[in-house]
Structure formats: C-alpha cells, structure tokens
Image 1 (cartoon, rainbow, N blue to C red):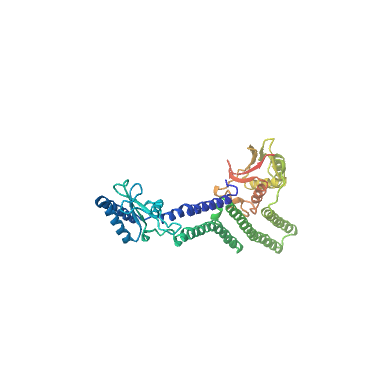
Image 2 (cartoon, helix red, strand yellow):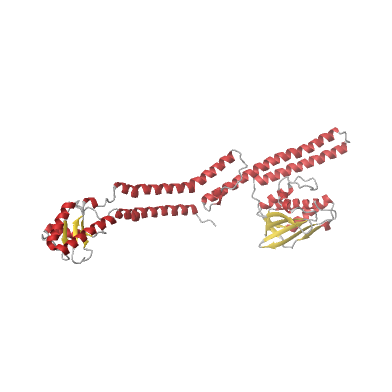
Length: 445
C-alpha cells in the first residue's frame, strides 16, 4: 500500500539527512579538525619533556647555580624565555622571578593542551613537570616560534567549511536528479516513442515499480499507452477483417448476379449475403463503440430467469431446438444489478455460441449461485470444448479457432465480455463437465 504523498516524505527525509550531515560536518568534524591543528606533535611533546628532564638532572647535580646557568644557556640557544620553578611557583635558580615573569605563570599550559597565540599576539607559555619529581619542580618556557602549531589555515578552513559542503550539496543535487529527473526523462522518451508511432515498446518501465507519485504517474502512462496500442491494433484489425469479410460476400454477389440464377433464388442469395454483411457491420460497430467510448451503463435490478426465457424463445425458433434442450437451474431469487440490454446481448451471444457448437441432441444449461453478494451464472454446453491454452483467445475480436463450426465472425464473445465488464462484472471461460462453460459474475441486486 502506497503512503500518501510518499514522494514528499522521501524528499523531506533526504533533505533532513543532508542538513544533519552538514551540521555534523561544520560543527563536529570542523571543530575536531580545528582543534587538532592547534595541538603539538608527539615528537615536539617528547622534545619538550626532554628539556624538563635535563633541568631536573641539573637541579639534582648542580643545585641553584647549575639551574641558573642551564636556564641562561637554554634561553640563548632557543631565543625564548624559560624558568625552572618549584611547587610554590618560586625560582629554583639564583635569580628570583620578577612580577612580569610571575604573571607569565598565570597562563601556563600543559603539553597536551591546544597551543595558539594569545590576543596580544604573544607565544603561549608551557609548563612541563619534572619527569621523576613532578611535585618538586617544573620547567616553564615560552613556546619557541618554530614549535607553534600552524592552526587552522585559510586553506584548511576553505576545505572544511567550503569545498566539502559544496561537494555534499552537489551530491544532494545528484541524488535529487536521479530520483526525480531521470524517471521523468524515461517517461519523456517513452512518450516520444509513442508519439512516433513506436507501438512495439511495450516493456514495462522500471519507474512504474516505484512506490510513490512518480510510480503512479508511470503506471497511469503505461495504462494509457497500452490502451492506445490496443485501440490502434483493434482498429487496424477491424479494417483488415472488414475489408476481407466484406470482399467475400461482394464477390459472391457478383458471381450470383452473373450466374443467371432464377429470380427467386437470386433474391434469396442476395438477401442472405446482405444479412451477413449487415450483421458483420453491426457487430463491428458495437465492439468499436464499447471499446473506444466505454459508456457508463446504468444498472437496474434484472431478473435473470426472465431474460433467459425470452432469449430461449428466439433461439428455439431459429434453431428448431425443443424446449427441453434448454435447461435453467436458477434460484427464484436470482436478481442481478445490471444494464438490461447489455446483459441480454451478452447472454444471447453466449447462448447462440453454445447452440452453434453443441452436437445433435445436446443441451445447454444455465446455473447460478450466490457468492459474497455476487451471482455466478454459468452457461454450459455439451460440445467439443476448448483447449485450456485457447480459453482466453476465444474472447479476442475476429478470433475463430481451427475447426470451429458455423459462420460467425468471432465478435460475439468479445462484445459479451466488453458489455459485462462495463457493468462491473466479469466473463471468462473454463472447461465444463462435457463441453465449454462460460462464467459470468455480476453484483446481486
């Protein structure tokens, strides 16, 4: 079952996912990249830790004088400020800290903290505890320029906050294109093929299998295209068949007129040929009207037994069958909701077809049973029947199976099915106990 406005929900979920992904990219991933660019490399952290270890070793070996000498040499070598202090933030060298130098201790950072310039563009101050006696002292230094992390450069910012969002937006556009425009292009190509009279492209479009509005549009198009194909094929078949069927009686009429038959015989021959042509034209026009116009047939309560009895009277007169060969086993309450004329025409066509294919002494039986508010009417003859592979083919217009008896044009069952379907019913054939069974399903009144 399709969801209501399923395409809307698909697009909404797609856009929501894109927005969440973009937020994650800008906030989490961008923040992560930005922070990682401000941390010291592991090698630089080990290098600074070694400086603290050297200061600790000098403190143990040479005391304050040694620490002071080492500090001055360190500052000269690395062109930076350094101090070795104890746990009370007092200098371990011979020179005490000035007020300005003591103020530097306020902004000390650990090695695993992010490093960046302060607002006044000063390099950060790093505190490194003695490796073995961290509670007794630490090395504090202003991070040398060459060790300062590069931070978030303009190029990095361009990639994280520019190029990647643009790529995601392009990906979203590609997904929308594949989800919306590609199916529409497929439908356009199929419509162009139909416009170019390419009636052989009958493969079902993959778009029709989608469970959204585009899928419904594709299914509607497929139904329309199939309807156009059927109409054109039926029109062409109608023209071919009419030209053939009309040519044959016309030839016979010409032969009869030139044969020198007596007037009465010639008149009978002409009348028979004219009746055949008239019946052919009327049946063909009826089928074309039902197939192309698809009229809305007003339904009413119809007593099937009464219709059957009226039809049987006409067929008895024409076929010279006795009444006992027409059996009616309908319940008294068999009343259906149908269009009277169309139902009568369908029953008549089915009845005449059964009589035409019945053997000498055969019978035609009408039965009915009520199933879930519908009447299933069955007309069964005792003829040779039809192969299971041909049960649907007999409803095709102008279809006459090999070995079929009679002079029919193959339109009766087609007209009967069209008429029943326009009333919301069904008509199909199946094998009976002796011959062919025609099943008709109609709503109960």
